[in-house]
Length: 224
Image 1 (cartoon, rainbow, N blue to C red):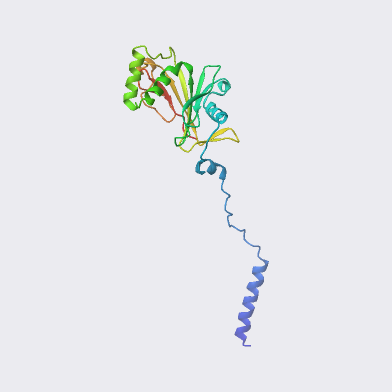
Image 2 (image 1 turned 180 degrees about the horizontal axis):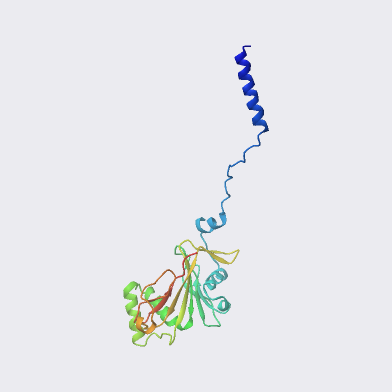
């Protein structure tokens, strides 16, 4: 072997020994972080097709009401043919309406019994084919001529809704839904309440339909 080859061989041998003695550098490889599938499941899961029983409709509907009023609330819902019916009579001031399973999404509402004449008139007008501004004007006229009685003071309606919402029967909760609150103050105005006629920021209260029978404070908490 030539002398130059001995030199080259010695160089590689020394380099190999140095690398063996040198401590290994810290492994900077980042392991992929496991995704939290819990939140994904509540927002991206396919909405199940549900056919809730009477008791399940009641259980879902009362979740829209304040917790302390749920046990004694009256509950409306739907029969197998989709007809609007009374599911349970109540013993307190709250009335709940179950989700209409023939419509997309989820919507359960509850409201103070003093709002029932106003709500019932709205349902009757819808059954007659009225909607939108026409319904609003007809019901307004009924209030002004005394046919429909409104609350003497404020009365609240609670709405639990979601475009992809559904009732988790096993855990007794509504998935993919948020609350909205409507506090009716008949014929209230900006001057009489000091409220803005539009929300100042997300979740802030504001006055809708001022000066009318259906005047109300709208409160929409930011979605979760």
